[in-house]
Length: 158
Image 1: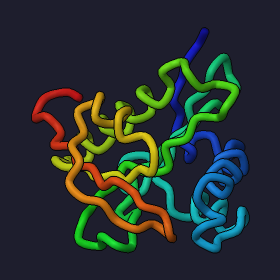
Image 2 (image 1 turned 90 degrees about the horizontal axis):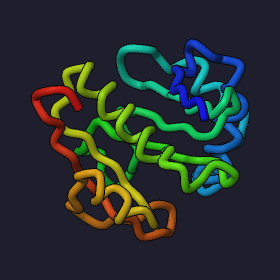
Image 3 (image 1 turned 45 degrees about the vertical axis):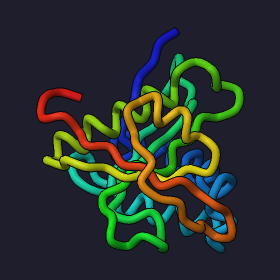
């Protein structure tokens, strides 16, 4: 099995797949459509700063995505930046891809000089806790209770 994580900037052909995943998982709740998400990804994403979007490829096929964003939770505008939109396609789950995506975004944040990252999750608290993230709060996300978590990135390599 060949695993590669690429920037959406470097692979814009994957933008529609990522936008569809994000819309299915979260965008509908937020009142967004696929085109709005795709447009944002195309216009805003960068390679070496914020925001960033990456795609995990397994044997060349898009299997998952994650982003590094300035903001991701309206209830907590005081927190920034965020690990966000971690998604692994159902056919590719159970292979450690979420962990790979999280570590990749942590490393990208570290490369940007970021010392602390935040995330929110509805049902993956155990996954993130196992990767060193700590619960700091609970909040509402479009009518759903979420756990807000934080990770202090080490001074050395992630």
